[in-house]
Image (cartoon, rainbow, N blue to C red; front, side, top):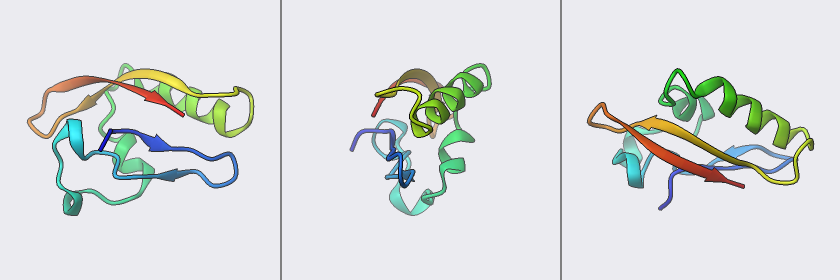
Length: 83
């Protein structure tokens, strides 16, 4: 499964956010968006939160953001989020 979030303007939701590319197992991760944001690189988090917020609030027709996410082994990997 791809790593990312599923965003709806009506109901923001997260789906298996850290499985797949980040190599976390399903039972290691909850569905709280903070599980995802907590693993985003500190230099990327504010821009990502701004992009997600703008999309949820209807300011952008789609979301596309590149950011680094912490892999289970502690390294960071680049990801592309589209919604």
